[in-house]
Amino acid sequence: MSKIPPVTTRQSPRYYQTLRVVLCVTTIAWGQEAGTPPPSKGDQEKILDGMRVYAEDYISHLPNFICQQTTQQLEAGKKPTKWRKGDTIVSKLVFSEGHEKHSLESVNDKPPQPSRFVRRPLVTNGEFGIMLANIFNEKTEAAFSWSGWQTLRGRRVAVFDLDVAKEHSTVKLSRSDLAHATVPYRGSVFGDPSTGAVLRITYGAYDIPPDLRTKSIATTIDYDSVSIAGRDYLLPVEASVLVDTGSSHVWNRMEFRGYRKFEAESTVTFGSEPPAH
Image 1 (cartoon, rainbow, N blue to C red):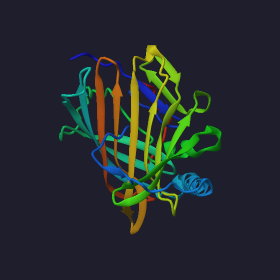
Image 2 (cartoon, rainbow, N blue to C red):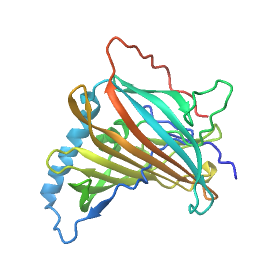
Image 3 (cartoon, rainbow, N blue to C red):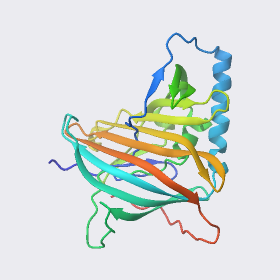
Image 4 (cartoon, helix red, strand yellow):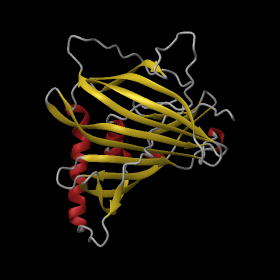
């Protein structure tokens, strides 16, 4: 099995990875509504405005919480037809005052051993609103275009394609300490047309410099209703990241479960961002 050089992607202000990305290649299905006319240009702008307001307020409206993140690591060769399972990593994710902190809980259902190196060709962070906020930030100057009506988990959603130029991008990739680059990206956002709530984000970087040895990175995050302390919030429930290096593929499939309130008497210390590995 060929070795995959660790790569890091950063999503400002705290989005980083060992190859750090989030791509959803999950089996959750959605379908295009055939024959349904698009909304008028004015109505499209109203839907987008609702999504902008939702994204702007998203993080500030989240409670402090704890959840369990389970990551299944998979790898394949040049053609991703046969996937080899790697480690299954379970982490505790604490979200407090708009920041994420991860702590390793188990590897393949066993407590982590200090003497054992945990191989992570791909690591992710930032699913809880950072990408959502960046996409709709005015400084990002994302170009949106109507894609169509679709059905996602039984809900009718409005889908807009988006493109963010390199000069406005907040997505940064790095391969170990050998190469770094800010890259443009394009994708889609799936939103509730009446509330502006964003239910899915997909995106992928492009024009990646050759020295990063990364042909493509694609990301999807799926949000669904989660109850915390008797209130419902839209939070990530599944995500996955697929990376094509040109000679091999790396795929992380993630689930977020067991959401519960992070009690005020608990304390979490957030240091500076860890260095890329």
